[in-house]
Image (tube, rainbow, N blue to C red; front, side, top):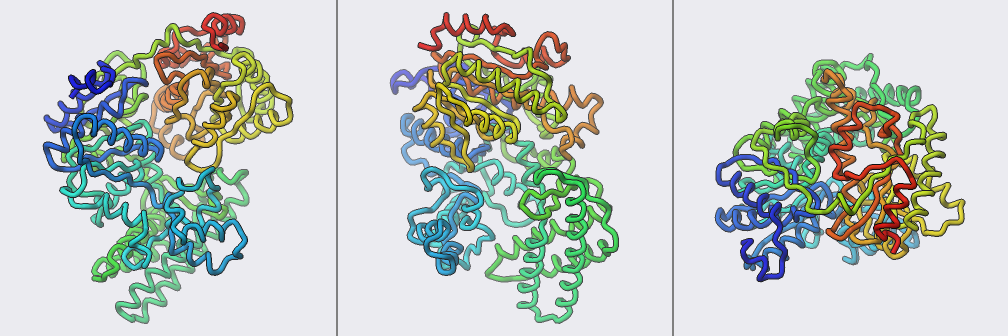
Length: 640
């Protein structure tokens, strides 16, 4: 394969070839493989080339799971490109996304008839009904989460929906669950893969085809968080009441048993009491909507009796035979979750974390298993199919490969081989400099404003140094909003852009490149964003992306560690920091400066983890002197 590269106009990269050989070797020996692939080695080609051969030889599909829609679409393009260049002319592939990305004509038609015809919601619904919009990505300029939530697929009716023959979601679900001989590549997000693993573990019908030849998980540093999110069950009063109504309707239709009415009435009373108590907790304790608070002991509710009735309901559901099999499966799964909630609240199960929040503008209770490593050991790393985990940021410092991959290994319950790290081919030594702002006060809740004011002044100085052309990464949306507001009140020599709501950021990136201004961002911009060339000459990290210590997940992980800072908080921060700093240099000719507005990394701070951070990043020229930075920018012609 690689011998053909010069003939077909592709550049040979040693790291890419080594990674391909490692994957082929793992497949041949039926092993799992963990591989860190540095920026610029061509990671997607490195796993697509052996995957094309493996699919061709085995006649079984290859599953590729990513952590973002943008990456899924890019891999699909790369597959088409490299497949055709290497002579794989008939590769059948599908990109599978979560149901929230697809438009639902059933819901849109309902809205279109009832809503005010001149409203933005009615206009959106009409475009969906008229087949102008199949997916969220079809809407140029993006759309708010609040508006889209009214028309996206939600509680799909599957076979019972009369729009199924023209539904992109229904077609996608059929393709990702096709017979092994009918599909070659199934590209899904990690959420969908995890949901499939959960369904198969619980004995219900999976979402993805049964017998893949190989599973590749790209951006695998996100896998733990994705598994936690997928295994976190969220309950609101409205959704739980609707679930009980749906279960009653299905069971009553089959049996006409009058006793069911009394049982469901009892369950609804229990649920109502639980949520009233949680609402009281939130009013008393939560300061912001996204605050996660402890749930106080539920009193006056016969929780064990409720759990018993729910188990009897699920037993009845499990023996039903009906053409609505998928709908029954979904209700069965949701009732199982409700049983878990009752058991956790009754303190029958202690292997779950539980918290309450107002994240959905109504009281929400969330439960999540404490440990996820056992789940992945049993469902993913069980030896049935070779699994390749890869990312540009998987490792910490350490002398052996086992030590370098240890944090992810432990978090994921990984079993398999560790492959040599494939380093980035880019010349960081000569093309980059890292600047640490030493005079900014440490951030904490008490001095937040003093920190933001000092960081803002330094940010202005840095953005003027490169005449804009700067991406600023924030750890907190509140900080980003504060800075954006201040910038809007000033006369600036460069344009200011801010990331948009929703998953696609292509529009704002195009505007940023066109204006050569400053782009304020958080969340999705820490990874997967690719801005090559002089349009991006500086990356500013506003503060080190440590996880929030009071978050229930990190609170639990810290409680299990001898040294929480060293074993949990620093390794987690480093994975995110390495992802963020990877946005700066995206090609062999790129030049740029990385500025970190967090004085905890300064020499004067004498933090134990400073050396670990500097060792983990590829930037070897480091300064705390602004004049040295100015000289570097001038010498390298970064402003030319």
